[in-house]
Length: 271
Image 1 (cartoon, rainbow, N blue to C red):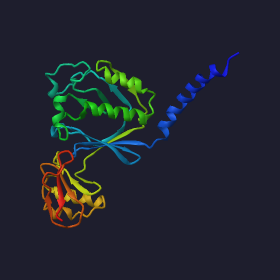
Image 2: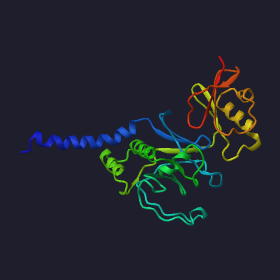
Image 3: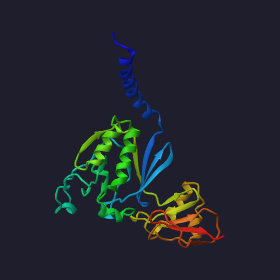
Image 4: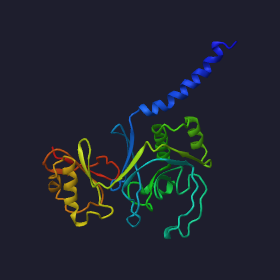
C-alpha cells in the first residue's frame, strides 16, 4: 500500500510544474523599447518602465534599423564567427567568454541583428552609436535582461540553470522562446519624462536642417506644447541630449553640478 506521505512529494512536484507556466501567463506583459538617439533600452512591464540600460546602437554607416520582433532565440555564452562584411575582414573567430564580441548573451531580433553583450573595453561607448548595427549592452546588464525575458516568456528554465550559465562563461546554451516578449526599435528625438522634456541628438541626421520642426511634431504628438523649442532657441541637433524642465515658458538655465541621465545635460527653470 502506498502512503499519503509517499504520494505527497510527487503531487507537490506536479502542482509546482503546472503552476510555473501559469505565473508567466498571468503577469503583466513585458515589452522592450530601444530609442536609437537616446542610446537607451527600456523594459516595460504592463506599460510601466521597470528597467533602463545604456546601449550602443550602430554607427551612421551601419545604422540600426527601426522595427520590432518577438524574441524567439536566446544564446548564453555564444561563440562568434566574423560576418562576411568589410569591417570584419581581418577579424578572427572567438570562443565564448567575457571578451567575446557578442558578450555573455545574445538575443536574436531579425535578419542579422541582435541585442548582445560586449567586452568591458567597449563599455565607454555605451549611450552613443558605436556598433555595426546590433544593440550592445554591458555583459552584466544583458545577463539580467535575459533573465527578465525568460521569466516573462514563461520558458521552462530554472534559476539554478541560469546561475550555472552565468558562472561558467565557456558553457554555451541556446534557448528557444515563444516570442511573447516583443522588442521595438524606435527613432525618437523628443521624449517626455515625468517632470522634463528630453531632446536627443539626431545621430543619423534624419531630420537634417529640419531638426526643430521634427521635434515640434514629436512633442505635439505626445501632447506637449512644442513652444519649448522656441524657448530654448533650438534650431539644430544638439551635440548631446538636453533635458528641459516642464514648467511653462519661464526662463531657463543650466543647474551647476546637477546629475544627468546618461549623456543628457540637465536644464532647469529659474525660480
